[in-house]
Image (cartoon, rainbow, N blue to C red):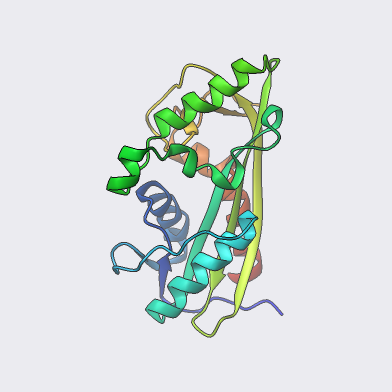
Length: 209
């Protein structure tokens, strides 16, 4: 049975400032205060699962149990058709270099370049189809969770365009659009993104629509 969310405060189980900001904006209309795992000093668990859903559940449950508050976790990434679905669940790891690993940061400029170089190396034809995927898990300290999977299909372009998004946003154009996620105003991206798709499902199930 689905569980309805009734609490006034929610932990966003992420240390990614872009994700925390997007999720906070999505939650704002519901009058729910959000606080990030980073703000609470919560450690990031190792993402050991083989699916987006598995990693989202792992992160949400870890944050809920550590904070004794409900927690919402996102596990998302870019799947590229010509690369057999890569980078997929390893999207963030493709942004890690020896230098960024030491600092705990990520270089998505390098990650985007790696994706494009791999496509060039195999002579992938245009359009270079890709899909952003997002799993959202809402978990409670007692171990109950609700998980939802969203997607946004599109294509990749080069060079990167726009500075309004984060991650792989500057090279991704959603189907039917002309601007990359990096060029879009947040309101437009929130209406069509993979995260918005998963969030709509979450709201319908746990917030009464």
